[in-house]
Length: 381
Ligand code: GLA
Image (cartoon, rainbow, N blue to C red):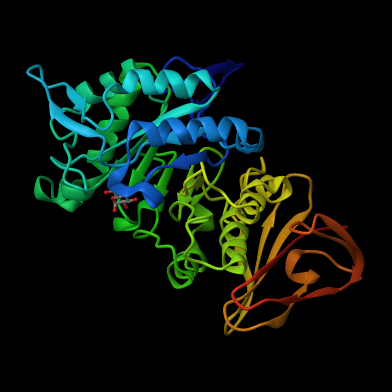
């Protein structure tokens, strides 16, 4: 769907991030919100989603930009005689749930699979794509995560693009703008074609787990994918585990630092009705979030590495550069050379986690980084 403007003899075609009706673009910056999977998995109920929406609207997350409240797998209850998807007894009334989420000024997301079954064995959208898209639109869904799962039983993987495009078209046909989240674990180099089949984001990896090894392997493993992200389309290294209890504070700081430098979607995956002040401070640091949401839309890249030490940088719209200094091993000093960021001479440095200007530095900046930790700064001339 696009918009044409005639200027003299030139025709400018704006490839659209917009809906069929030309409303405002969805996911112009990486989507932010919450998803039920990482904490609740298949135990999730409408009550949990209700609780998450209430929490987001009252704990500062909404103001910080977290907007989508997304139900993941396990909400489906089969189909009625007309073939229409129905929720299971843990959900009951999806329209009422969506209405509640909307009443809090938030947006509502849902989950399906192009296969006959989802990954957890619930009803998928196979041969019901248009009907499901229409049902989602009627419920007021704003976001669909579409997870490959059992689709290999009915499609050769060589058709994966067509399969995703089919649902994109079905969503478009409803006329309701919905973020389209591709989840197929990075198969077939999805970052090269995810945008062409209508994806706003696409998972680049298998599932994250709430452990440093899993998170760091996924996060640091995104190096090289930066060329494929931009405004309206994001590489998705999977959802956040902050607050789920499996990592130490420094490790969760690394998680948030890295995801923001990667311009990754920020979907909290914890129980928002019980968040410690420590985890809340990680999720709510506005200067760190601003790096993720920066309108230049550039995904950060690795500028330097030496064994377990890494430096990553993300250029920002105001000409400054966000920098992450990481130690994937013990506590070590980590140095960034300003020339690696395109700066020479004296450069201003601000610590984004401490929210403190550190002053001006010549040629380089060194920080002491904790084991599995990160220091995040913004630097400018
Ligand atoms: C897959 C996805 C996860 C989650 C589960 C649900 O494993 O990658 O993110 O959606 O399915 O079953």
